[in-house]
Image (cartoon, rainbow, N blue to C red; front, side, top):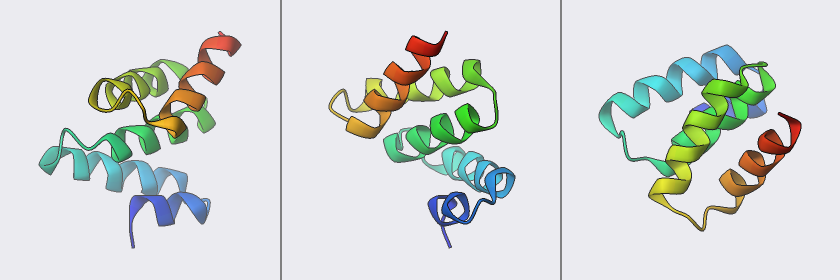
Length: 77
């Protein structure tokens, strides 16, 4: 099971814990930063969400999921 699987099953806090653990070993994982950005946004923590989405876009500026989530959060703030 991955953090994305946990997220899809509405296990948000477990997804965060798993993803944060993943970043300890793979700090340049754009997909993990994207997922954390999306989960933190859903959990009502836009500052953390933006931090992770910015990192995801730094790693891969063409990441469409990170771009959409980032633009959505920026529009809401």
